[in-house]
Amino acid sequence: MPDKYKYLLPLPDFETKEWWGALRWYELVFQRCTRCQTFRHPPQGTCPRCYSEDHEWIKVSGRGILYSYITVWQPVLPQWRGDVPYNIVQVTLEDAPNIKIIGNVIGVDNSRLTINMPLVAVFDDVTQEDTILRWQPR
Image 1 (spheres, helix red, strand yellow):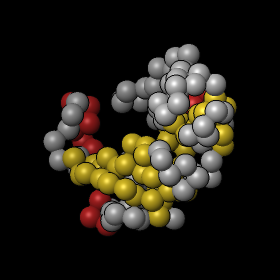
Image 2 (image 1 turned 135 degrees about the horizontal axis):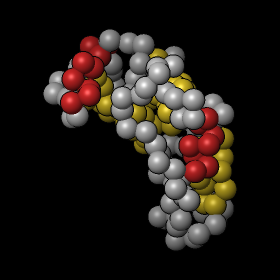
Image 3 (image 1 turned 45 degrees about the horizontal axis):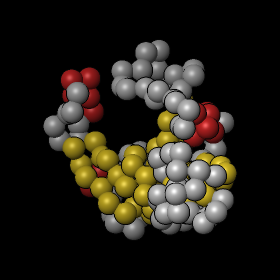
Image 4 (image 1 turned 180 degrees about the vertical axis):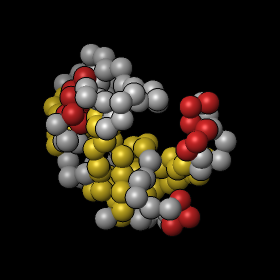
């Protein structure tokens, strides 16, 4: 774990604190509407399908497939200059196929990324208090 994390850190709020808290325990959870059973992400107060405010948090397997990706060659922020090229991916979850979650894949060269690549969630402790979600090939 680095002494000082140079990137943006999460700022949990009322709707996202369960999500970030679960990541800290190496669990991947998503909100699911208790009325229509639709998974949703990012966490929000109202179901986008049926408008219910009722939900539960469901633990999922962390298995997904690479839906889309880009390779970034120009850093968005100055502190990312040493990291280019890096990838930004969109992952479809096996347990919640209506969710596509943004992240990045580690442990593989960007040139080896392929659509439909099987991925698994990994948890990266970037500070003593903060864990973020990343992906790696299965």
